[in-house]
Amino acid sequence: MTNKTELVFPKGDKITNNNFTGTAWLQMLVNNDSTYNTSIGNVTFEPGARTNWHKHPGGQILLVTDGMGYYQEKGKPAQLIRKGDIVKIPPDAEHWHGAAPNNGLTHIAISPNTDKGSVVWLQPVTDEEYNQPTR
Amino acid sequence: MTNKTELVFPKGDKITNNNFTGTAWLQMLVNNDSTYNTSIGNVTFEPGARTNWHKHPGGQILLVTDGMGYYQEKGKPAQLIRKGDIVKIPPDAEHWHGAAPNNGLTHIAISPNTDKGSVVWLQPVTDEEYNQPTR
Image (cartoon, rainbow over all chains, first blue to last red; front, top):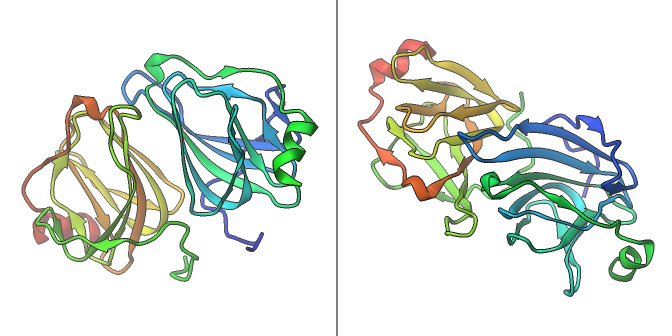
C-alpha cells in the first residue's frame, strides 16, 4: 500500500457539514439530474474519518480506488475494504463507511435511482462504534 | 502520461465479440440487476481499438482512468478524452469511444437506468471514420 498513488480524480473540497466525523474531502464527478438519475462523487477520508450513519433510497455502489477502511451495515459486523473492492449498499440499508484508524480511504460513490429519493443522514458513528471493528 | 500506472481494477478478459474493432478488455465490476438498475464495467482499449457505433436507452457515463482516446456522437466532431475526464452520453445518442492510435485508454463505464433497455450495437467504426478525428 502506498500513499503516493497518482490522483486520477481531484480530491475536491473539505467537507464542512455535520454528516461526517473527522476530515473528509468531496469532488463531485456527476451531479444528479433526471436524465442519468445518478450522482457520482469522489470521496477521500483521512485516517479515522467516517460518514455518519445514513441510507440511500436507491442504493449506492462504492468503487474503492485507494487506501483502506471499513463499511458497516447496522446490525452486521464491519467489513474491511481496500483498493479494488466494490461495495453494493442495498436501498434503505442503514450504514456507514470511512477510513481505517491509521490509513486513509478513497472511493468513488455512485448513487443510482435518485428518483427514489436522496440520501437520508442519521446520527454520527460514535468512537465506541468506530473503535469496535477497527481496533 | 505514463503507461505504468498501477491497476486499481483488473483488466479482465479480452473481448471476443464483434462489437469492437481491435483489442479491448473487459472486467465487469457490477452486473446489472433490478435493485441497482445499473451495470459497471472496466474497459481497456489497446491503441487503435474502439467500440462499434452503439447507443444506450438509459444513457452512459464514462470515468476515464488512464490513457487517451476519443468519444464521438454521430454528426458531431470527435472529442479527445484523457485520464480524469468524465463523459456523459445521452440516452439513445449514437456514439463510439476508444483509444487513440498510439495510446491506450482505460475507462469505467457506468450504465444507469438499465430498466429502459440494454445497449444497442450498430455498425463498426470504419478506418475512415476513425482516422478522420485521430490523424
